[in-house]
Length: 164
Image 1 (cartoon, rainbow, N blue to C red):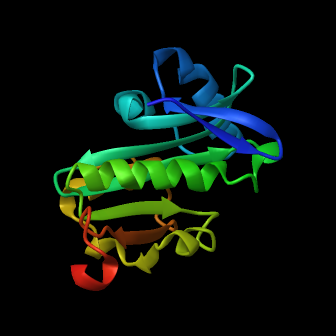
Image 2 (image 1 turned 90 degrees about the vertical axis):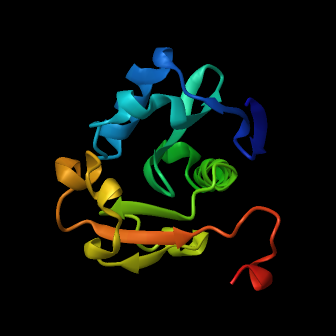
């Protein structure tokens, strides 16, 4: 899955991450203050945006039966506001929907005001399925003070008004 995303900063390529990207992904996540635990394990379900050979944004998805954990959404400061973060999240949510995922969860310490624009709402930790709570992010990579959010995905091909 390779495609081109154009912004005022130029074109970027969006693609599935691979092993060769791991160092750059770690550097981007560390700069954003995001945890590294579990990244390598889930790397095949990460997307990166690349511009002139440099990774400028990343986002990942961990799949747990009918649920998923959205994680590691980071965009280089000079690319923030370009829509790349939203693009990566939208693509990951689409992939989750295609795999029959019903609910997507996330933890955040800094973006609780960003994710509601993408349809996520705050919930309590005890509302998260046990399988997701066993992820590296929930078991220690993210602090207990992190905000927990959830988005219920509408089934593919069914308009939101009919899905409920």
